[in-house]
Length: 534
Image (tube, rainbow, N blue to C red; front, side, top):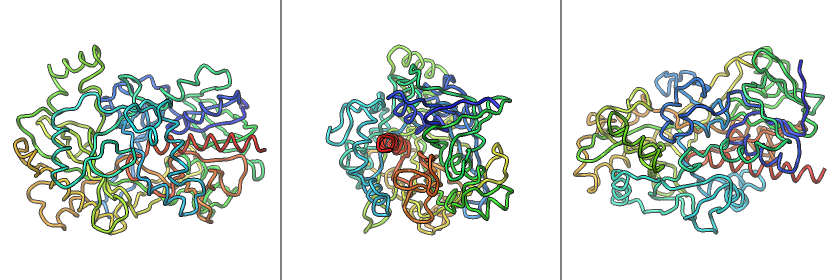
């Protein structure tokens, strides 16, 4: 078996792993970065509008599926996750959303020391470069360029106006001081291209002799010497290899792959590991538990007398947009998945928003999101932004290459369903606002036959799905069910941390890519601090 050695071994070159590789190799420490997928060569990765071609592309996508569950109509729901340099930041909708200040203060109140909003704000600022924002809240010199939409269709302006008519205040910066109301979306970019962590953070570090990147290298196990993690085994092609860590192993495989790697390595709930034939090395009950995700349902309307993406995505209009993008870096090919958003509340008395509405000046096939309808339309995705339901990610076999069972347990808590219904009502109020009146031909989804709260609830159960934001399966905390402590060290072991979205105790209010990058930035700083103190 071929063997290598480094100071730090990072498993997963995704949203977190690329940040860690940059920051930890900057001082000359030797870093080996393992990525199960290929380099980010696919052209659709780099064209922002290419995201719709990546949701079902097995070349760059793990193509996971959830287990059928009664609360969501016994459907198996498609769960795309990036399997490529940059991970899910290479295939996502490019939205940059920090979340609400209450999210991080809630983490701190739950026992995660050093994770209040005041604590994490410097790390949010250090990762980004956003010119328009208030410098008290926004970063100006980080590796990740954040931009407003370069081209905005009239439908998006109408949505922002209609949302204000429906009672939602305008917010100029949804990741600034005020994180509630309606506002225009921001995107992580690299010039006219996608701003994945591979093309920003990792690109900064690629020339360093201290950094070695191994692609098509799937981790198969963590090597333990007693209570210390000392390395990683991985498979590259048909070869099994080992890389030893002089200081630490950092697992950054994401909310699905991180708990799965721990479990097949013998770290996890002892009873479950025994039941699937895995030798227990460290009984850690919380590994794979606490799975949380944003469940979303979509409301759509047919439009007239205005331009939607449906028209721009085919034929001569598409050819014009391609030429526009090549010559000016603007136009429809610069679009992500949502051009404007609303953060709002499902009912009075809540301390912070529990609904995210994401607007797209396009309409999609009801059975397969990502496939545009032929007729012009617009869509509001209704997301349960602070879900109470919790699920699991559990290994099904000692084989590290076998897929784990994904059980999101969506809508298990009745309030999550009530929030979905409230969000659909908000979406309908916006569609019915005066600014949209001349342009809305009819509601297509849920449709006129869906009238009562019970009808809307049944619709949500039948057609809803993931908004691609799973978190929580290696939860941070100081209690016995926590997997990592407040410094992201795996509890009960040394030389091993988990740093990615799986450590979030509660999912943030909104898209999770920006918070995941922040977690990696803060995690890298803690690793360097601990190394200096050792």
